Length: 302
Image (cartoon, rainbow, N blue to C red; front, side, top):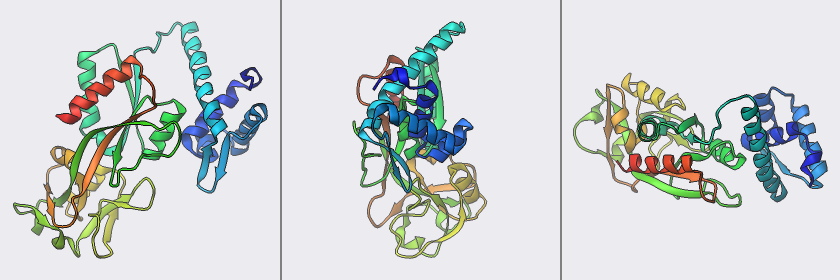
């Protein structure tokens, strides 16, 4: 494949599609029509001589050839962007690191780690973005993130099946907890028995895969009553504080709940564990990413 025959527009469109997971989402992000995105992908495939995307009902997936093209496209676009900054007289971004994080990591872990890195290495710029696990993993693959802090639930499978496999490191493993209104009958001292959760009203939201309700205690032997749905963890906890129902939280958030919420352990049934995982592409990380990774390790351990 001769990249000289490929437009920069086609490469940027391809990177956006790889990150967004669908042609429609890429078109919306770029301000293009979906047909324009399709044409750019088609032009790239003509030059490559092979499909770079596998079209599926739930979006697109990179083919083996697409993975190779994406890796090269990231390198080319990085050089072009660096040249543009140099010509514009802007400082190089050698001290920048791009971090993605799942929603609840933004309550405690990410702000503390970023603040600590700013104190110890003021020359490193951290650029962050929140997202679901599939979005963040695609961004890692597309080269628009350097590191991603992900949440993982049993059985703790890898976040995707693509190759090469992502480098995964468990930063912390904590038990799942129950958040109840301070005036709720279960809010007394001591752990809650899982049998006492029958008949409760729940505040929950769909998981990234849209299959599991996040916020309902796992393994209940009844169909839960969902009183309110919300994706944002702070919205869920604010609804709990208002007495609207119960929700679940990782133990790491116990110190960040709003007033009017009690965080309790639950006994009975299998132990519910949650992991905070740091993900990146294989290979040695750049120095800014390595510095941030070390600060995230220390912060999570504390």
